[in-house]
Every structure is written in structure tokens, then in C-alpha cells.
Amino acid sequence: MRKYETLIFDLDDTLIDNNQSIKYAFTIMINQLGIPFSNELFEKWKKFDTAYWHTWESGNMFIPDSVKTLEDKITYLRANRFILFFKELHLNFETAISLNDIYCSMLGVNIMEIPDASKLLQELNSNYEILIATNGPKDAAINKVEKAKLDSYISFIVSSEEVGYSKPMPEFFEFLYQKTQNKDKNKMLLIGDSLTTDILGGMKNGIDTCWFNPNDVPLPEEYKPTMTLNKLLELKRKL
Image 1 (cartoon, rainbow, N blue to C red):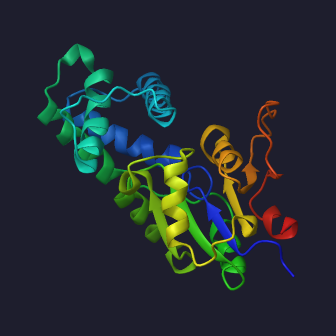
Image 2: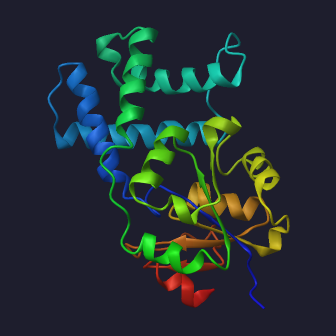
């Protein structure tokens, strides 16, 4: 009898090569500002954006009291990062919202799957409930999954924007549990590349984890994944 019934996959940099997606989206977005693309600026954006969302994930993001609803919170968080990153331009909030709309819509355009992602999901689909848990935008996630032709293998997608909380927060996982067919955490496995969102999320919420580590990065002592992969197809053997 197999141990797991539900496989929870992260999306970006686990099933989809996120670097290609964000590079394309960033290029289109800065063109709207009349700013030429450079690798230096792109790397600066990636570092900033990662740190920005980690601040939110850790519960340390300041949100004004005037932001009441979940929709308003998402709008504020996304627009505010452009205001902060392009602070020399003194963007107003409406312009920042427009830039975010362009950026998010372009995230689902230039899609490249991680090697063997579709093959793995196809082989696992008949035996497991498969879902995606992402901190990325919901529409972009749907576009990525469809364009990579992964959608027929996936039961549903849970995005932080629809929950109002992100991995590794417990509220994200409580929302996810409500949607799964299998309700037993002991029969769930979370597969992802991020130690701070995926592995820590599993550790904090009682779910076994599988760290996807294609670059063979050393594992810090504070993280304890149940298993580690260097290539996606290794998962089938480990299951």
C-alpha cells in the first residue's frame, strides 16, 4: 500500500522554469516605462521581489489600516512593490496597478516546463490526487499550467491571492485542506524548490516534504525535508 495519496506540487521552479517567465514579463513591463532591459536590472528586480514577498510571508509586511478587503490587500501588495522598486520615478498608485496588470498578464506567456515535469505528472496521475500550491498570481498559474499542458493531470490550484495568506502560513494550508479529497495529512507530500515556503510550510503544518534541489545546494541544518530530489523523475522511485 502506498504511503501517500495526495501530492502537492509547488509551481514556479518546480514544474515551470520561472526565470524565463519573469524575464519576459519584466522586459515587457519596463518597456512601458521607457526603460531598456539589462541583466543587471533584471537580477536586481528578482532579488527585490523575492525579498518583498518573503517579508509578507513572514508576517512583517506593513499594510495600511485603510486596506480592508482581501482584494484590496492583494492590489496594494502588488502595486506597492513597483512603487518601491521604481522609487526614483515617484509612481502613483494607479500607474503601479497598471504595471502590475501588465506584468502578471505576461507571466503566463513565455512558458518552459522543468525537464520531465509533464512526464512525471502523467505517470503519477492515475494513482495520486495531484494539486498545485503557489504563492504566485492565480491567473498566471492557470496560464502556465495550461500552456505547459499540465492541466489534465492536476485536480486544482491553490494560490496565495485567493487565500489571502501564503506558504508557509497555516491559513494557506487550512484553505488547501478544505479542497482536497484526502483529509489525512499523513498521506500528503509537498514537493517544492523553496526551503522557506515549501519545506518550512510542510514542517510547520505537519506534512511530509520533498525538496527539489536541481543545483545540489547544501541543505541548512534548520530545514528537515523528508526526501530530496535532484531530478523530478526521481520522485516516482522514491514514492
